[in-house]
Image 1 (spheres, rainbow, N blue to C red):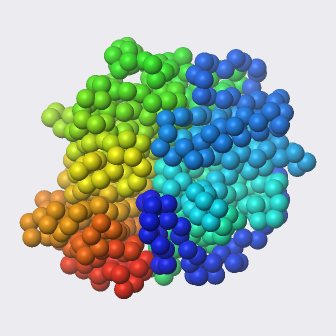
Image 2: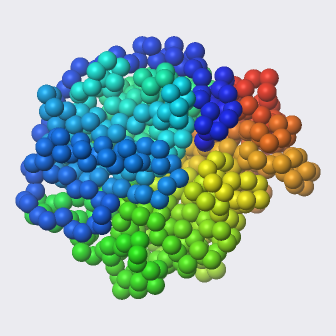
Image 3: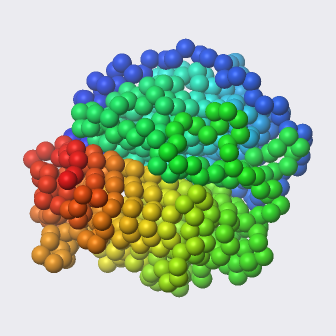
Length: 616
């Protein structure tokens, strides 16, 4: 979901400005009252003073003894560099040691730009308290063109925000007006609203595709967020919905009412695991907490103390720099080290290969792997319990068969349902910063794999963009059995955007845009079918379930193009789909929602969904 027609009255163009939606404004009117200030509770005692490890030049570590002015100078300088750096190579991590930052008289205000990770270093989110804001606002491409649809590639985690400071409209809550690949995890927001749109900068603008997990908030202003997934959290209310809002294991979530309003709610999440995180223990030792996987869970993992799981001292990790070769990294992994990728861009002329069970690969500041010479940048062997978090992977100029491969597909998978290999906040790109080529973004061959907040994106804007310039056929291909995806985004690929061949697969929330740039209908059809579905379950599959899925069309190169269907599945009792929709974003026609069911969407009703409550 990028800079394109975004709703019923949007104007398509690169960097296009989404116009206001009357229904959203009406829903918002009663939702933005300032919540009374409350105290966050005392944070845990700060750990003993210990020197921070050398995590490279683009990691900033803040201590509560530092002045607010000094911290502001640091974070503001990074924001100024990153606010418009959508396709750049700079990466940053901002870490806050346990303690309290800012006061009512001098609140700490942090704005978060591209490729910036903001995280607390406590064992609990309440160990780091920011009295102030950590905000994402609309990005202004021009004074009269401010949008949030392209606010990607940033993150916020493991801290408490006691909302205070700023004035007028900005004082009404903590703003997180971000779209895909901008997760909020383990965040505790008190003292004010959390608002997922920016109604203060050039009026409300659409955002699309956000993700929150393991967080506790008061009232949430959804506003103009078109799609959203909240998983395993606690919320104090939710203002409204636009097209597709999904809640899974969320205390305080609205009941299922799809399509009016379009809420889809699961009481528990079938399988979940939270992302590993850095923390400093009471002795000043730097550790990585690796949460355990759980089944049928709800609420936050830290409600009764430290998140269940294991802690690994940072000394057990190979702390990699972008100057380290893949050979060096693989040698360290083979010796039993876990892998911490410090911020930057890593050229991978061969695969980083993980062959040991329970290995943790954690990227800081959205560290990126770039394929060189047609390599598959990351390969995970046929072993259970590998956990990968926070990683970006870019296709290079020579086509790669895949960008990430889980399991070989040639050997019996040694999987473990109770300890699944897990990918969290893994973002795959073909084009954008430069021309790239790949066949598949993510290929999953291992059974019992868990995918949590995955975005596979064939770029529709940026550099190296065009039907034959950044070719890629599929965003995600699942061959393993018993694979679960919670928050799956796959967009703009030339054929089936997601292909699910494995049995007993489950997807909670799916977002898809079909390719914009098919040159004509002849180039985009197969086997007598117009276009390709956004989500394909193989004809041989007998059991599969999906909750909350959307597929959207915007064929701006040739507006006469049709796609026969958004979702294509075998008709069998074990394959069940819930809360599906298609939307036309300004060009093209999607004839059906799923198979031959569901009304078409076309230019007669731009931005108006066609809904199917359940199928079959």
